[in-house]
Length: 460
Ligand SMILES: Nc1ncnc2c1ncn2[C@@H]1O[C@H](COP(=O)(O)OP(=O)(O)OP(=O)(O)O)[C@@H](O)[C@H]1O
Ligand SMILES: [Mg+2]
Image 1 (spheres, rainbow, N blue to C red):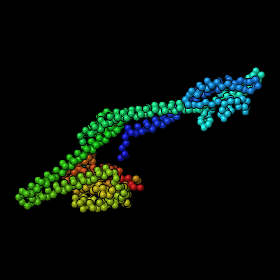
Image 2: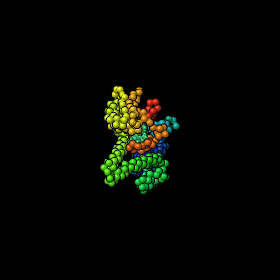
Image 3: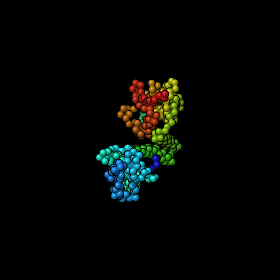
C-alpha cells in the first residue's frame, strides 16, 4: 500500500506553489512599471527645469554667455522629499559657465529634446537630463548645454511603496484562495464521508450494490466496488452451496454407519453381525472417498487462488505409465483389462501430484462405470503443439443428455450404485484449468464407451 496522502494538502501545495510563482512574476512586472512611471513623471519635471534655465541664458555684449538661474524652477524639484538637485551650464565645448563642475554631462543629446540617463554623483544615484540649445545675438548664435540632475530617493521610495502594496494585495489573495480551497475540499469530500459511513453501517453479509449518490469522479470507483461485490456474492453463494452439498453427501454414509452399528448390536447371529459390519465398512470407505475428494477440491481452489503453482516441466508419459501400473490390481479385481499406450517422453508444464489425482479419477471412473469385462486404455498422444492424456473405455459411456451436467460439482449419473460424490470430473476439469489444459468427453472408438481427453500444451 502506498503511503496515504491528503487531497486537501496536495491541492493547497500546488495552489500555493503556482500562485507564488505567478505572484513573483507579477510583482517583478509591477515593480518595473512603477519605476518606469515614476521616471517618466520626474523626467518631465527635470526637462522643464532644464528648459527654464536655458531660457535665462543670454549672450553678453562681450560675446560670452550669462545665466540668471531661476531658483523657483529648481524649487519645484527640491520640494520632492529629501532629494537634492544639481545643475550646470556649459558654453561651446570646454567652456564651463556655472553650476557643479563635476556633474556628469550627457554627450548624446538629440536636438531640442532633452536626453536622460541614470548616473551617480558624489556617491549617490542620480537621474540626469541634458538639454542642448543656442543663444543668439542676432549676428551669431552660441551653442550651450544645460544639465540638471536630481537624486533618486523619491522615485525609489515611490516604486518601493507601489511594490509593497502589490505584494500585500497578492498575499491577501493567496491566503483567500487557500481558505477557499480548504473549505471547498471539505464540502466536496462530504459525499465520500457519507459513502464511508454507509458502507461502515452495513452488515457483513450485505453485498447489495452501493446506491449512494457520489460525485461523477468517484462513480467509476463505486462501480468497480459494486462489480467486486457481485463477484464476492457469487463466490459466497458457491461456497455455501458447496458446504451444503458436502455435508449432505457425508450425512448419508454416516447415517448408514450408525444404522449398521445398531443392527450389529442387536444381531441374533454371527453372520447377521458380519453382514452389518461389512455394510458399515463399505459406508466408511464411501465417506473416506468423499472426504478425500472434498480435500482435493479445496486444495485445487487454494492453488487456483494462489496462481503460484510452480509448473515445472514434467514427463507426462512416465507419470501416466506409473499410475496406470499402480491401478492395474484394482482394475483386475473389477474384471477390467487396463492397458497403457505411449511412446517417448512428452514434456508438459504441470504439477505431478495433481496430474496423478487427475488420472486416478479418470481411470477410477472407467473402472467404476465401464463394467466387468471392459477394456480401458490410458494413452499419451502427441500432435504438433499439444500432448493429450486419454482414458478410453468401451463401457456404456455417458448419454449425451447427462454429459452436460457431469462436469458440475456433486452431479452424478443416474446409475450411481458405486460410492462417489460426483466430484471426480469437476476435479479433473479444474486441475486441467490450472495448467491451461482442456478436458473433453467424447464417445470412444466405434462410438462405444467414453474417451476422456485432456489436451496440454507441449512444453517447448
Ligand atoms: N467412464 C465412464 N463411463 C460411464 N459413465 C461415467 C464415466 N465416468 C463418469 N461417468 C458418469 O459421470 C458421473 C460423474 O462422474 P464423477 O467422476 O464426476 O463423479 P463420481 O464418479 O460419481 O464421484 P467421485 O468421482 O467424486 O467419487 C458419474 O456418476 C457417472 O455416472
Ligand atoms: Mg468419479
